[in-house]
Image (tube, rainbow over all chains, first blue to last red; front, side, top):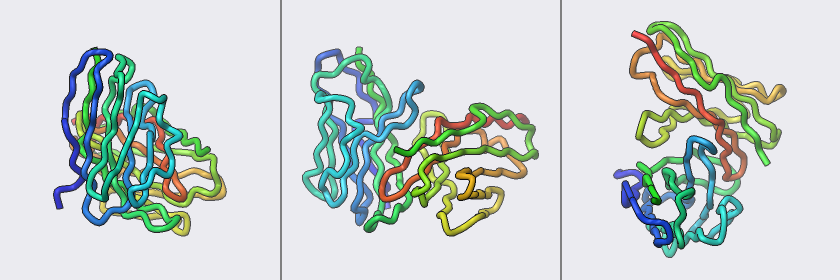
Length: 116
Length: 110
């Protein structure tokens, strides 16, 4: 199994530009999570999908952030327009979550985003 | 919501000694407590987890204990080695959501 796949691994963009981060979860996992990691705030959950449906987006910082999961094998996190304070490492994680029982989450390699 | 506190924030140990990291949580409904290890520039990787119906779990040099009454859980690493140097995160969750501690930077001195 290739594990969770994310692209790009690194992204450098200028303020105001649109940024799209991509994630392919582990095959068979029905839950997908987007996290943001910074030194100041640690690991923050941005949004959670179950069976391709967004269940909890309370962590999305503002309307500039949006996420989609059009099918079981692909998700995107978009920032438009980007700002320097969005600079962080963005992780995607997937889990074989079933019902209300929490299972282990497997993290992708992350995308290091730098907004200048 | 759940609030997880983790201590200490940094820990330096001599190779071969033990390391202990402690976490407390606030939501009594939490029933899943994983520990992740993150090396510099890498992804968090699950190293051990415990559920609320178990008080202790061990995997080779790593063990986790859980006290549901006191709402705290701990990670124990015995016979530390240089490759144990990393940031360790505890987390607590119920349903689907995990709340992470702020992390402990462990340095193993050779």
